[in-house]
Image (cartoon, rainbow, N blue to C red; front, side, top):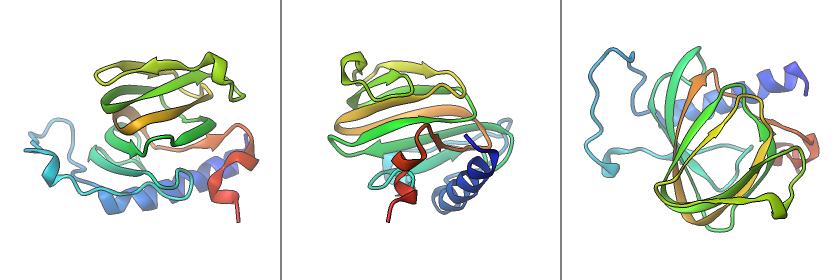
Length: 159
């Protein structure tokens, strides 16, 4: 995994995320999102096509805590990839199957149901599939970035 590609991916993600930020307030400021109608979802970008996200708190391009929601359609498959920070994931709607590893192995997938929780360590390759229309809430540290284990699996590199 090359640093240049990680920086490039981070720049793309940060640019995309800037369009769907609810708040970039500091953690010591009071903030309320009254309900889902106030969320302004945006496309996640070319690395996760057909998915959307919204940043609830933090600046994804800077060092510090970030809280986001990510949603994907039923059957959406994400191939092995890593992120620089630990992800703490709560399934708010739908469900998913996921596993840790450098190669997609359906036999290792474990279910995380609505209300379930998972921790994905920093730089741990992971993969999975959304079951039903799925919404996740993810707590991590910025700056955000995504690196696919096999660069050929990165949808943003496909023509």
